[in-house]
Amino acid sequence: MRDGPDTNDGKKHLWRIYDYPHVISLYYSMYQVAKNDPEMTSYLDADGYLERAFGTAKAFFTIPMALASWSPYETGTYNEVVIPDLIQALGAAGHHDQADWLRAEWEKKVEFFVNKHPYLYGSEYSFDSTGFESTQALARYAMDRVTASGPRTTDFQTKVKYDDARAFREEQMRLNIACRGWLETSYYYLGSDYRGGGSASYTLSYMAQMGGWAIVDYALHDAADPAPYLRLGYASSLSSWALLNTGTSESNYGYWYPGANNDGGASGGFEPRPWGRAWLGNKEMGRGPWWYSGEIDLGFSGALRTAATIVVRDPIFGLFAYGGDISQQGPEIHVIPKDGLRARFDAVLGANRVSIAMDRDGFARGRPIVFDGQWRRIAFTLENRDGAPHDATISVRGLPPGTYSVSAGKHPDARLKIHAGEATPIIIPLAGDFTDVTIRHE
Image 1: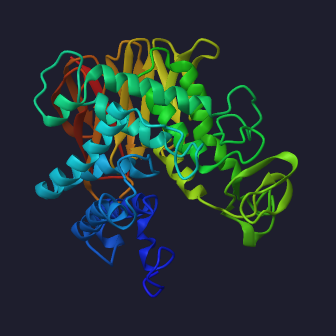
Image 2 (image 1 turned 180 degrees about the vertical axis):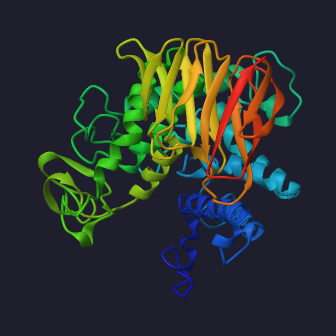
């Protein structure tokens, strides 16, 4: 666009608010790569990518308003869920002024959605489903910072009340589910988002997986009965992977479009009718995936955010692991992660909602996570994905409060305090490829 005309289709195309968060996410991800593995980047260093991420975020909140009076505060956009992480990273890197500026803008948006009751189906079209990843992230931000009876020490806490934040959280989740397939279990309906045409056309869009992240997040942190939300949310996170055309030489590299040249291609949506018309290009086609990728990379981003091994006691399926193999062995539960990333583990069992998340490493392939029903002991094998010695950070949340001992390989046991409702970081020194870790309640 730099060499184009001085119009909205040229240099002034910067008016479109939806374009910015993808670039914010890109630069923030490159910051993470450069921070953890600096030898893998050559264009900028970690601080350079962090500066780019902030600059793009600042542009997001200023330029569309200046060019077209299009407010970034009043519409949910995709990939902006990374902004709270970017704020935290800016503060940790010492860029406190930038962190404070961006936090103030993000909180304006949270306040607007909680207090002004906007029409949540509105986007680039009058009825759309593109905002429900953002609305859950906005609700999560509010709920993490306001309490029913706690002190109000920040400007945000005086403007956003607990009851209002909770009401917004529930409303946006109801609307998310209202435009999502859950009655019909065909793979191109179950978990898919629906647009204005309902289930009659254009299923398995990018919003299927993005909105799936929102439902899983709600199930893990908010839902009184998480089981039905996990069923739907995890189905949503998997749904649009059906559009990925890939395979082996034996399968001729893909079901939809065979041939090595098509291996790894992906479609942007699915035509559910026996014969219909895709909206881009107005081309007639039969039931199956579209011939272009559209914005499906956004859906895959949502799926990667969701990817975790999640244990739940489901009233229909019993003790069950999404994204993993599970077995009960005496008093212990053994879970082998198979969610694709092996970087996050969640268990929603009764009153306990336990999560373990890695920052750069993961659970070892084929080795179980072992825990007992009382959370007195958790054991797993940590996989060094860097290959070089470094300190791995594990974030643990939801364990019963108390003092715990942590043993990791040959290192002396460490002790830590775990408080209710707080994420506790655990530092594990990694030297070899694998390190056995045990967390015990004392």
